[in-house]
Amino acid sequence: MKLGRLNHVGIATPSIEASIAFYREVMGAQVIREPFDLPAQGVKVCFVDTPNSQIELIEPLGESSPIHGFLAKNPAGGQHHLCYEVPDIHEARAWFEAKGAKVLGEPRIGAHGTPIFFVHPKDMGGVLTEIMETPRGER
Image 1 (cartoon, rainbow, N blue to C red):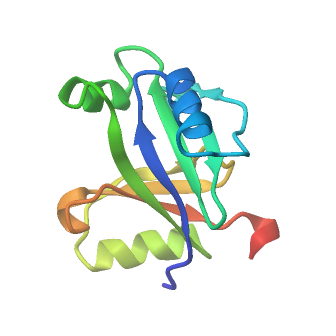
Image 2: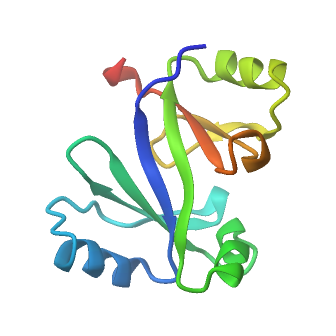
């Protein structure tokens, strides 16, 4: 398994609109993508481009959203996860499982339209980690 670049930092937020204003007005972000719903994961997502990565703003789509529980513990929001790219999602999953890491669920399509899975924080130095297959045009 070959770990690729840091694709994004996931930030849970109670309001994507307020977070967009923060990144635009305080942080000077110039490229902020349109927010969109990702119902299969129970979230609304918006990407903020940085020179070498992205910030993924994540807002819950209702009380059943996994982000809802995170915000219950962290009402102002905060860092939710780190996402790294890999060339092959299935090879990466097998590699993490062989190392004894707890993979959370089956690979599924993420916000970038490529397969993803998450690895439990207890096996990743305390950080929820998303593993994402590198988009085809970027390999």
